[in-house]
Image 1: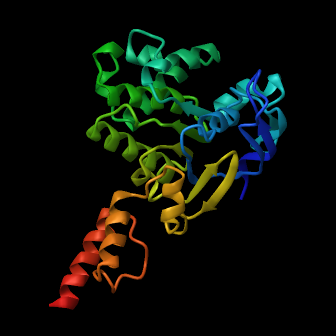
Image 2: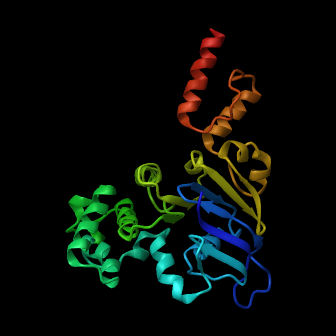
Image 3: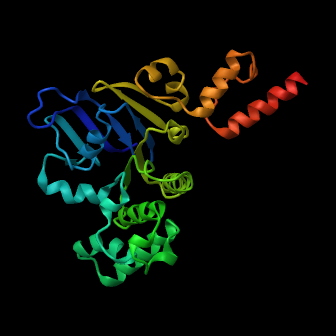
Length: 283
């Protein structure tokens, strides 16, 4: 399978800072994957994600996009940012216009696309994120979750192969968070968009394909969620808490319940099934 993002012995530090934030990172993200990147504050998550979009360039090693573009080459930056979009933590950081549809059209106009193609793409992506009826509204009238949907639509209009979500749900209420997560999963599963996401809420990455955990500038884990979350004590020592439902299931097992469940429980649905099965066994 083709790599959409690949790092080769990647190392980086900010100006006037001698200590490398990370070094010798070798990561390969394949087309169509959904990957969670985790780590405590200061682990370099956001810095790493910005390397994937060429907003930051390596001090050591290289980042290759779509197996052909090196992020160190300024001539590739426009192509890279069309191919790999970045959705920020604060949706207002991506709003540039006073009307929703104009905001989404902004980047397409800068690319010089024909007016009819721009209109087609704007309407298309607004429907994907369920914001078509708001196309004539000013963004300031929208909720945080709706603004984030507009940010996602602006990236989608560029027709990227991959989208990076950098703490994209952290400023939203529970409903807004749920809506955005649903859209993220649909983009990956229905439209085949490669997704990378970072979050402090590990419940949000329970169903991704892979989880990469950064610790002190190095990759500590790179595996399926059920494998990574088995390392509860080590993750908690890093300041990361496993999903609430997983923690509850493990605590119940320690008390002698759910003994029939061999697989690590990651979702509410799996937890309910395990409880029902346990009740049936005890009855």
